[in-house]
Length: 146
Image 1: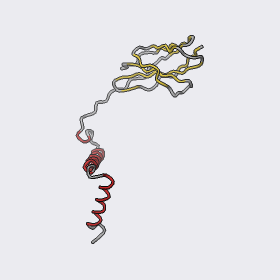
Image 2: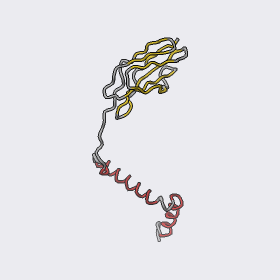
Image 3: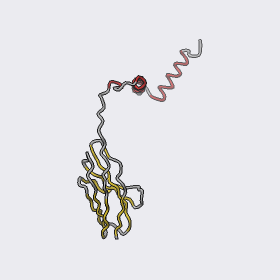
Image 4: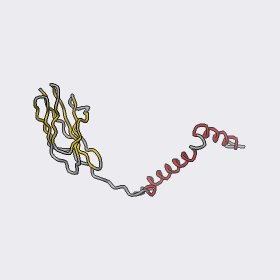
């Protein structure tokens, strides 16, 4: 009959049913259709692919500037300048220069005192939060707890 006889198609259908199950076939076909439609829209340069609503782009918050650290006994006092568009700030600390940094506080003010520290050097960065997400890290500063 040829390369693709009815027997071949039945074998293919049986394999698909075994792997995906009867209930998953409509989902798979829907995903395939959406993928093809998205590809066609992307190739045609459509700005509004798939009839989706227009995307509103929000400006990400800027990283806080002017971060300073003042070393004290068993604490380090941090302060920084307000970042435009920021609703809060994440203060992060590391025991090594360059990180990795662990989140130690989420605050609305532009200063923070990291208290109860053991003796040693600590490294800090601050990020700002806005409706569009988290900014990049600020510059790193270090403080020493005695």
